Length: 110
Image (tube, rainbow, N blue to C red; front, side, top):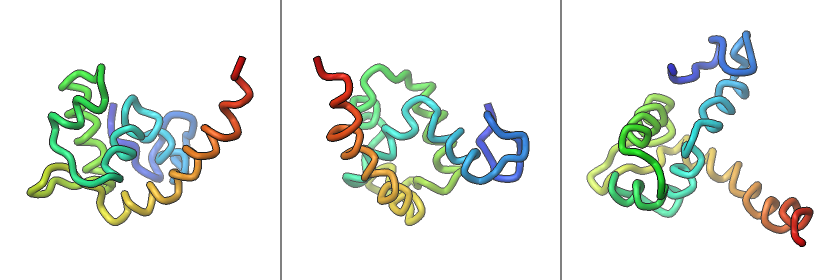
């Protein structure tokens, strides 16, 4: 599967609206988890693999490649890290985590 690019057809959008391209990327397995983890600072491949629990090395390599090509992460001396755009994205999506825990999840408590 190719890296979603704004202006090109993506899952759910033939026109490739930028938001749809971004949601296609973030909807891929472990993409958000990697971004979420890297918000705490740079991480090595091995630490990311431990964080993502059941991820295969092949899938992790693919996701890292896609996120790098999308300018959301970069390779540094310390490992993988969020770029400026990656940090901005995290700041936008981080409130969803709190809302999901505090508001949405309470609908499912028994």
